[in-house]
Image 1 (cartoon, rainbow, N blue to C red):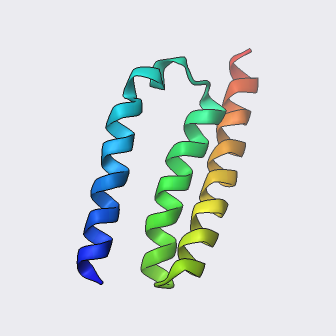
Image 2: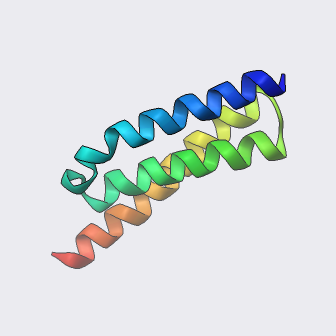
Length: 77
């Protein structure tokens, strides 16, 4: 189980580092969704281990981060 979790974390980090070239092109809503989703996955899996907690945490984090980023985008205009 720990090996599977470690390999998943490494895979996620690889995707994050590969996507850094497009990070500057994203608006705050998109950045918020990415950061919120990643954080939500980690928190959801910690609080409720298994696929259910991970999915719910990721979805909630992505929506929350996207909403916060969208508000920042509106304030900057």
